[in-house]
Image (spheres, rainbow, N blue to C red):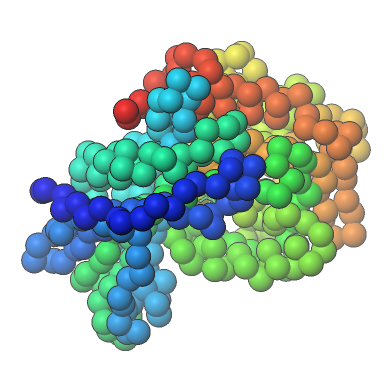
Length: 354
Ligand code: PLP
Ligand code: COI
């Protein structure tokens, strides 16, 4: 399939890296492609970033049949553009597609389209450590229909955003709040897919967390309300004295690509790391016994994010001394060194695209 290209006529310039927040500034172009049962995926096009025309009856607007991904391109000191584990994101997108009755993508085709788009918008890739080009591939259901079923038509698009840190705290410890009253996803549901509704379902608890001065919610399992699952936009790791523990994938947790990268690095470095059930009481007990050394989240947007406080009802624990813990720092440095090309990519995670 040939991609039709229409260039934007614009002289917009990228702001200074220090001005960048997360997800507010979009680049000049986007990639779009349509799906119908007759034609499959068709009409691939790179065109100026612009609004969509959608009928108010479009199914995504009513029933939320939508999936998305989040990945990043980084600029190295010698001006190379590097993608980090991009194929893993599209493989996860196809798993989400299967889970949400959405047609799968041809991964080679969309990866090539994405690379072409990024090359066209290269000037929007910021260059300093902690900044990057955030890539958001998305699929939405577009049938104009009010009955509940899977749509027959879809739109796939990729938009790009020049970003800095996800949290206003930057790489400083964030405070997280354990939700007692709300759950995000349940085993057998769609928690392991990157689908819009999971995020909609998380908003009420997130708002409460923010009102109380916390950055995000730490979710517990929806059945026993005791085992730790993940944080709003990241997976979570607990560094105990003798091992690092992260919740096992139960079907209600997003299988984070950064999470797999942390696990791989820890194993490579000979650290003891376990994917298993860990309850909120285990975490508070470990803290009481002086065994909880460090807690951090992992995610594309969040990178490695140290956690400085966890609140659960009327109990709160402080982790560390207000500065990032040693283990969080070690993973942050190792991952960002690979992503920004400061160290050779021994893991096969990087693809240079210019
Ligand atoms: N968990 C949730 C709910 C997320 O939205 C994300 C971000 O994508 C993650 C975990 C981390 O996943 P990844 O490392 O693939 O970005
Ligand atoms: C990501 O880390 O890419 C995410 O998708 C998290 C969030 C912005 C939804």
